[in-house]
Amino acid sequence: MSVRTRFAPSPTGYLHVGGARTALFSWLYARKHGGKFILRIEDTDLERSTQESVNAILEGMTWLNLEYDEGPFYQTHRFERYNEVIGELMVKGLAYRCNCSKERLEELRERQMANKEKPRYDGCCRNKPISPDEPHVIRFKNPVDGAVVVDDMIRGKVAFNNSELDDLIIRRTDGAPTYNLTVVVDDHDMAITHVIRGDDHLNNSPRQINMLRAMGWDVPRYAHVPMILGDDGARLSKRHGAVSVMQYLEDGFLPEALLNYLVRLGWSHGDQELFSVDEMIRLFDIDAVNKSPSAFNTEKLTWINQQYLKSADPLRVAHLVSSHLGDLGVDPAEGPDLVAVVEAQRERASTLKELAAISRFYYKDFDQYDEKAAAKALKAPAVGPLRKMRERLAQLDNWSREAIHQSIEQVVEELQVGFGKVGMPLRVAVTGGAPSPDLDLTLFLIGREACLRRIEKAVGYIEQIQKM
Ligand code: GLU
Image (spheres, helix red, strand yellow):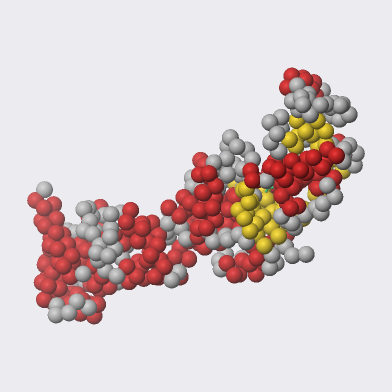
């Protein structure tokens, strides 16, 4: 039987990192076993589901390259099918109408709580003849005896006594099928072999297994993925910062870096940190996922991103960084070749956003110097070297790295000073103090005109502070 996994988000918000990791694990498992990955949108909660959120989920999956082979299937398009199954359960005597009032259920609950019992429906309507014409819900007749064992691929065997499970509602008074029923029907109809999902659904599994058995359907394998914690040990939530996957796009992360980080959240392969997608597919296995929750660590993610940024195709990085430059008011067409700038700068940045910030000076004059850098480099003794450098650079026949390099060396020699006495002020004068590569390359990329203008400005700046 070929493997079929699914990702089944409820569209009540964006795609968050927890959801993305679950999707990744399901996707990897399908890819590893040459199976199919199915996307199912669980939008039966009409009040909380939105199209906007569906779009956000699709957008997140597209960005992460988690392509699905089938779907997206929408549960709201399948109500007829769910009702058909509910009808079958009724015919088989495995479901029944219940007209217990809210008050009765509330009273029952209070009584059970007072007796320190677990609140559960008492099966009051199990054998009552209730007309379909009066308001009612439909409940599944859960077996009363025995136990259900969830043979989880991550947790191992987890047993639930049927006496702990009650007759859950599978269709509401308004006719809408409920979550546990729709999942069971879909997992069967979509021939899902492996249900990989968050461990907040572990308690639903015995109920779902009972329904699958009642219908005479195969029970899939289950893998409940432990949750992700914030670095403070609490469940990862908005207050830990960026939890929407798309926020990472905005913050300048590469999708492959986020995937790499997510796969390592709860799974490892020796002490290897970096995994290409092909390697992930080859090495990942769901039963090697850790049982305990893992903590999200932005620093680690940033480190991984930096590694990918360093080795990614420079043309692609240039393409990606240009939108971040746009956010900074820079049009990369009006300046040096962006690919060359990326190659020169990228090892100094951890994210595309940072790369854009430290590359701005190649395209635009800056308004201010980095305070520390200016205090150190732009002082009275720098005026002479800067003026000389300006003169030399203005006279160069050709604007090449080699020629620039030679002119710096010549000035150093002429003035009989250390390289730093010329190099440091020159660097701050043209970059404003931003991180930059070899001086000749930096100047070369900035271009002659901007260099001359900035050196002049730096001299003016020094003279100005001297007067103060
Ligand atoms: N729709 C459920 C959720 O978003 C997932 C259900 C499942 O995977 O079985 O939490």
